[in-house]
Amino acid sequence: MINYVTPGYATSVFVAAQGVQRIRTTAESHRRIAIVEVMGRQSGYIALGTAYGQPDLILVPEYPLNRERLLDRVREIYDIQKDVVIVVSEGIVGENGKVLGDISQTKDPSGNTIYSGAAEAIKQILVNELGDRYFTEKHRHDSANTEIFTRKIGHTQRGGRPIMFDRLHASHLGGKAIDMLHEGWQNGISILQRVEDESFYLDSIDANLLRDQWGEIHPRYMHISLYDPERFQPSEKGVDYLKPIFTNAIGADDVEWIRAQLFDPHHLSQPYHSVNFDMQKRILYLG
Image 1 (cartoon, rainbow, N blue to C red):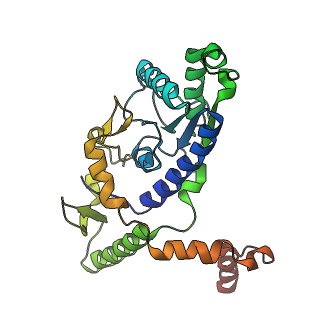
Image 2 (image 1 turned 90 degrees about the horizontal axis):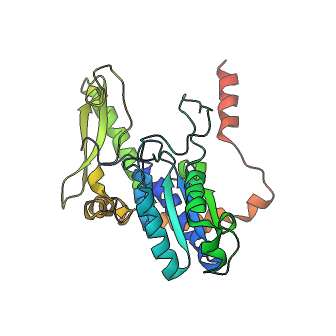
Image 3 (image 1 turned 180 degrees about the vertical axis):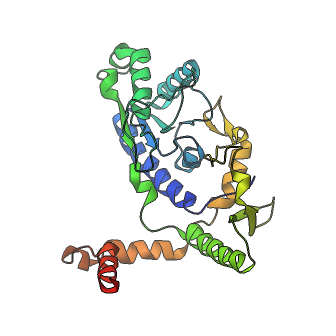
């Protein structure tokens, strides 16, 4: 593994896992099937991490959807507990290898296709295959379309205050990058590594190791050994991968910041002060 984890990942999973837990309340109380979509155009790492939020099923892009197995598991779980929470990566693919949520032709600022329908695509599969009778007769509910709902966690996964794990290791990696410059590195990357039963440590690699023969850098795919496609959950290796990252990932200062800052009374009367405002002032001053 070239790089064990990248700062920002822990915070994204923290937000996504919390979102899954909060959606569970509605799914459980209303006896519904909830489909939660998280980031992951080509990689299922964030979806894998949402296992901390205890979703019933997780779908990742690295494994084409097994439609029959998914339907069987949904029925099994719903018949027992009367609610199901499914997490899907935005880039999940069907059995033909095509992206299920690719119903939008728009692009993001980086030129990537925006997949706007992964959760909706799964919902339509469940609506069509389970049918209204599954809910109206057996479970005394409304139509399948009403009883299955989707939610996107969206940009909240990539914003806000990073948790301790990310703040700590991002600063260390920045320091490592400066050391590499002093050592004369060019086209190098500081990375975070870990060996079994030991703590994380800093290392460096040549950036060309991340490029293909045409010089392109591709997304880091989740290793297939980390996921169990039969259970739609992290495999034993996946659990072993996640534990070192998230055990003690949240610091006491994270909790204190929420207590002190979120409900600060001054927020009720003072407008938000954007960093862009200060940057613009400096640009005008320097100009």
